[in-house]
Length: 115
Image (cartoon, rainbow, N blue to C red; front, top):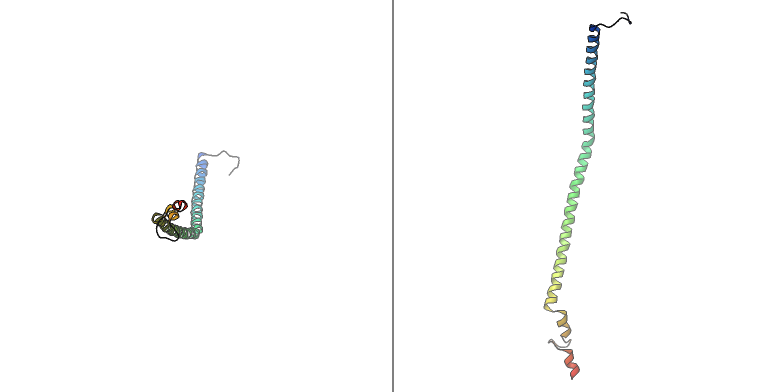
């Protein structure tokens, strides 16, 4: 075969079919490599996914515990406030200043000054 001879249509078709076959082989190998990489990535992220899922569950539990603790503290504060309000309603500060330390009845200190 002479290297300088002009190419015939048959030569060009042969070359084209050879190139198409090589391209198809390359495409198949590339697709397989992409699938392999995908599999490796999924395998690599699976333990991470489990760890993150566990951390989220732990966070949910801790958040729930915090909310419960805050609710309990609020209940304690509400009970204490209610006790203070009851004491103030039963014995207002103005009325307690009128009460004699020696007597159970109310008195007006101005009455003592007039005597």
